Image (tube, rainbow, N blue to C red; front, side, top):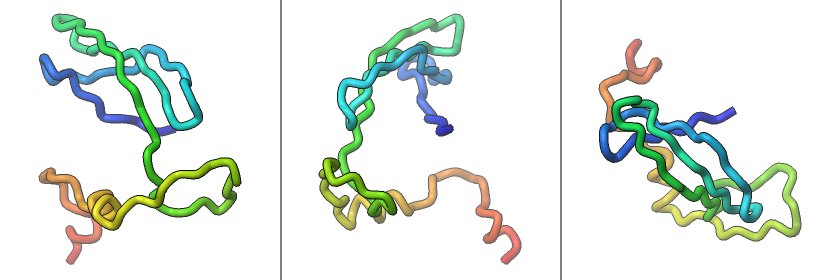
Length: 92
């Protein structure tokens, strides 16, 4: 199971997905709620699969997505800008 780090644009509190519905194999609509009780904002969002980053080991012939350009693949490999050290770097 994946976790998404979604942040409320108002109070910066955590957002949770209350419910979601598939619109298409590549598109899902979600309804979000801020976890900060003082804020209580709710939102509608859409999650879309746009590119293939690497090929599937079990390809479905009916799935046709463009391969991500090199710039997108490089961005996915970048480390997040946070203060936490990579486990391997900590022992170097």
